[in-house]
Length: 214
Ligand code: B12
Image (cartoon, rainbow, N blue to C red; front, side, top):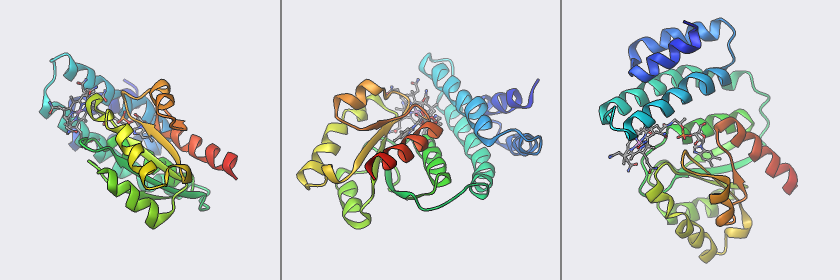
């Protein structure tokens, strides 16, 4: 079994005790961090979610998989920052939408954006509309990003945007949205400029949007 397969398996099994050693081995073998995240960790989470959706796995399984992914990311994150060409490109405010507690994907987007030189203000999970407004007033970000994993709470996106419009702030920022159930069509429906299916693409899109703005 390849080391990437092993990391995938350990994540699916929720084996947070052994994941660290394997992740370190993969890094020592020269496997790119991006590859470990995209080919093993994220794929494993997708698999666990699908089995949960089909009733084959349960909530504790999802929690263990999440804990395993977090353990792996705690090792990878500091390594990512080291090898980057950081210059402060711009400011990003990001949060998981109101009613939603998922944060693994958001945290990955943060890691990648920081790697691209962004200053990131993380508003956390279950973020109320007003919090985004406050953060824009305080930090004057270039980009405001919503992360959403639940179909139900993604329905709150228009309210998030309306809060920005009511505060007269919508035109001052570039909006971004992402999360497993989000699509390009969804973003277009609400006039959201940036959509990306994964964290590396997200960071690239942020950089591109800023260069087009300048
Ligand atoms: C782990 C997990 C949990 C953990 C969350 C732990 C945590 N700290 O985040 C726990 C166990 C707490 C949990 C709870 C629940 N969950 Co859950 N969960 C998952 C699971 C298995 C993985 C999510 C994940 O971390 N994926 C890995 C990351 C890396 O991927 P990602 O989040 O998609 O992010 C990537 C991209 O989407 C993108 N991205 C993410 N954000 C952003 C933002 C921007 C701006 C951009 C550009 C890109 C971007 O980049 C990321 C990195 O590549 C998914 C399955 C799935 N298919 O998504 C279900 C899933 C999302 N959960 C689901 C459900 C139903 C729930 C619960 C309602 C279960 C329950 N009955 O209580 C609760 C809801 C709690 C709440 N109010 O939020 C459903 C949602 C169904 C739906 N479409 O609405 C899913 C799809 C499982 C399923 N198939 O049924 N969950």
